[in-house]
Length: 408
Image (tube, rainbow, N blue to C red; front, side, top):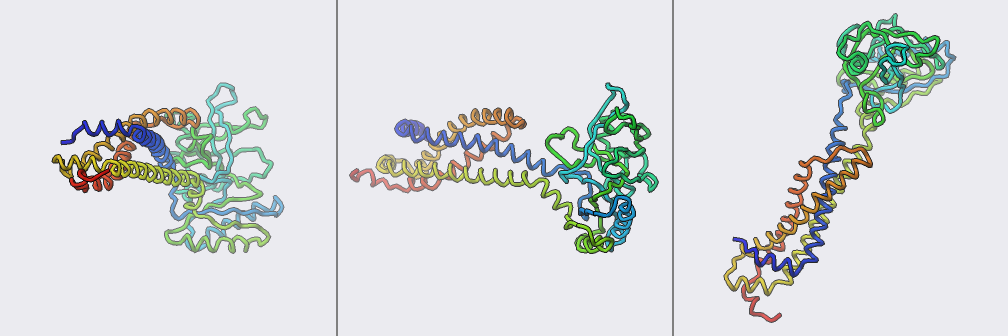
């Protein structure tokens, strides 16, 4: 049985050291719990679905300098060559892609009335091959046809008469009503040339190109059947196992249509995703490193303190052994002593962790810290504390009773 009297007596004599270790543990727990909370949020972000079938999907950019009137024919030739590549199952030209960072966004209104329902939306230029290339599917309505597709010059402000929207955008505009067949105004509804576009289809949600400032409408996306002239971004889907070969042939194929162009290096969607979430991945790695460093510093602090106390108390330990204390009694004494110090530090750490999280929530709009992470952090600190104490406690237990008869 653990004797509490000697433990409290020892802590009273070494109160400053014990207090410093308790404060270190409190700071460690506060940082640990909040770091785990942030890591959880970042890991959830990394796992956010895009709505695409991401395997066997890649993209590349192309810039051309041919006159505007020649670009529709060039675009048609590009897509014909691209779709004819061995292993390519579908491809289309667009302005942006999910997780691509850059793109277009527009406001939508149900009517020209100022009080009509409105929504914000990312705009993806598309054609009849877009749905198959992205790997999403129609929920209602129809796909685009070749007759829906029009050309859009850099200064063109017109919008197509037929559009497709994601399920999230349809719900935002029409609640539970079927959106197919309904009309919306895109962009400046007050323009004399503004005319409504009819929703011909609703697809499963796909992600917008951005994050952060528009988290409320991450999947509010509109597909517009237009060829954006002047430059192009191409999305390509290949058959399984054929992507590397298709990516290797893209630049030569595109330059065979017109060698006086710039064709960027193709990028798989896995690379696009990794680039988009680079900061989140780095944050997770940094916080894991911080947690590991804190655990080591705390462990070394406890190890050093207990080792010092063992050295100071060798004669006292020998006296207890001479009076009948077993090795197990001595071992449990130091383990219990550390457990008590860690417990005090954890109680302080709870308050500090909650206070730190309140500050982070107000400063960076973070979610509030769950009690679960505080408990997990507490268990982790207890484990580190006991492991760090084990070796010097065993050294204390090995002190022989004869030490009590030696001089100081």
